[in-house]
Length: 224
Image (cartoon, rainbow, N blue to C red; front, top):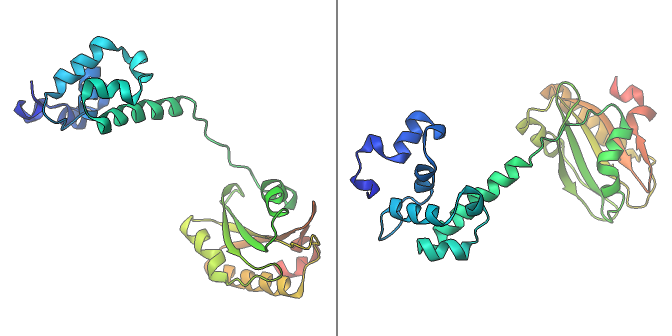
């Protein structure tokens, strides 16, 4: 039977919407993937497929093999893509978001990457209310010796990701980790802007050659 000749309520797509995918047979599910197949009844092609394959062997079929039956390369790709997503889901493990308790944790996450950079780079670690890492965003990539950054560039990803607090990180391509006057001024500006936005700057960490410095640890009064 051609799908367009079926009653609307009996078509696989409508049944899936009403009853959920669990209520559909393998044939119906595959028919949804092959919807609008040209010049043939979808169910005829699905029947041909299941005469040759079971679900396991179908999941291993190539695009070229499926195209011979279906006659449509795009639809064959859709089937292959669906099974690949299923395989990835089966092996998926949700990454635990690390808790950032100090500059040592910051260095473990971004230090190896940032200490190798030849340009000054500014990143921001976005944290939730429990100091768990949401994500790391690069907010600026400067020249060898300078980097110009505005607080709005720091807080834009924080606002977009509903971060409760942030940690600013930048590298010194020279390898040193002593904060410059500009580093201190930037830290003050970010703290002031954060108070207005109710987003706390937890620390500003400088990455050097296999070492790091926490501006908060050196200048705690700035953060009070």
